[in-house]
Image 1 (cartoon, rainbow, N blue to C red):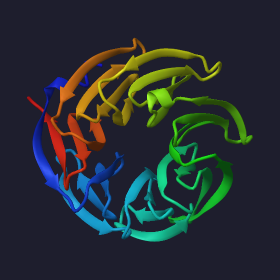
Image 2: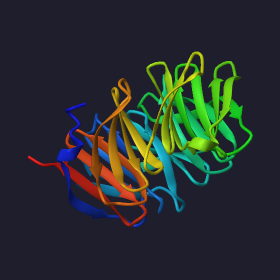
Image 3: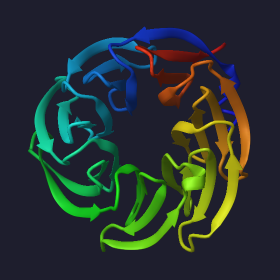
Image 4: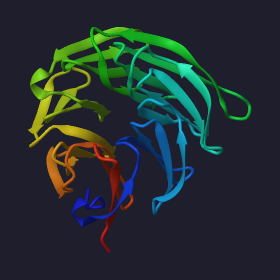
Length: 293
């Protein structure tokens, strides 16, 4: 979309951290961005100017992913645990042993937490809270076993899509615990997945559409290098490739809208919204890009 205007962004600063960034979580209710790192440290910055607020050591292992639970954050780590952090107090007050290996991806849908792991499972948890809106428990609702390590997931209603190491893609009715479709996508090197407008969108060296009802493959668009991170903004898919190039891709028309060459290779994750673009790579810092006026 024209409002994204990737070409108008330029690097304004680099923020140092202890180890590389693993994820960004935006919390609009508190105008905050949380930055997870491989050091186990979670940094907090105030929007819109990325003013440092505080940092907290959550674990001595890598933080991998997380979801916003309104009053709390749920952060998954490489030790298989979920750490619950109070957004108001900035401290961890609950820890749940959810998996036996690294938690690779987390999603929140209809009040349920979905987590994928290298223990070859996707688990579905309901969230029990206290009268003071603190998380009391994560209660296991369903567990979906896979043949190999789960790398990433996407959820929309009863449909769950999981990408398994070796690039097989499994489509589930997670509530009925039924496999709807399985396909081998080794040739696309799938590393990310999302569900958009009755389509399953697979990303790797290509963007591939699957019809979520018939599972027929539609449009395929090949990129120069592997997609390392992505973000959906309405009908625009923003991706960052191994080379550091950020692309705005129109999912309706199936065309590239615009590109930004960041010159930051080996990216790990990124975030873009409202005139701000954050890009982490395998260095001990992350780039802050702002829109030129």
